[in-house]
Amino acid sequence: MLAWIGLGANLGDARSAIEAAFAAIEALPHAGAVRRSRLYRSAPVDSSGPDYLNAVAAIDTPLAAHDLLAELQAIEGRHGRERPYRNAPRTLDLDLLLYGPETIATPVLTVPHPRLHERAFVLRPMAEIDPQAQVPGHGPVGGLLAGVADQEARPIDG
Image (cartoon, rainbow, N blue to C red; front, side, top):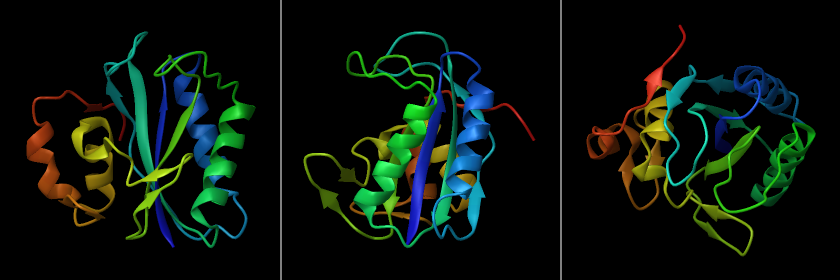
C-alpha cells in the first residue's frame, strides 16, 4: 500500500529530528521505496512556538494502517514527543496522511488526515512528490494548491 506521512518539528534540532525520522521510516519492516520531499518552513497553525520544519514521505508498505500508525508513534516517542495539550509544540510529529485510496475513521486514526487539504505545509511537499496523488473526497493534490495559495510554506533546501 502507498502511504503518505507528514513530518514536522519545531522544538530542538528540528532538521536532525526529521532526517532521523526519514531514516527510521526507511527502516520500517518490509518498507519499499520511500520518496521524500524537501524541507519546508512554515509558521505554526493552530499552535505556538517557533516556525516548523515540515516534509512528506511516500512509502510502499505491507503494514496495515493501524500498525503503521503504531510504528510512527514509536518513532515519535524515541524523539521525545510529548502530548501535554492539543497542538503543543513538538520535537517530532509524524502524521499518517493517506493510506492508498482508503478512508479510515476510528477512535485513533482518521485517513485522509482531516485537515491535509487545508494545509500548504502538507500539500506543497506532497505535490513535489506527486501532484496527481488523490486525496479521497477532495481530488488531486495539485488541484488543492490554489486553496492554500495564501499560506506560507517555503522550501528551505535543494
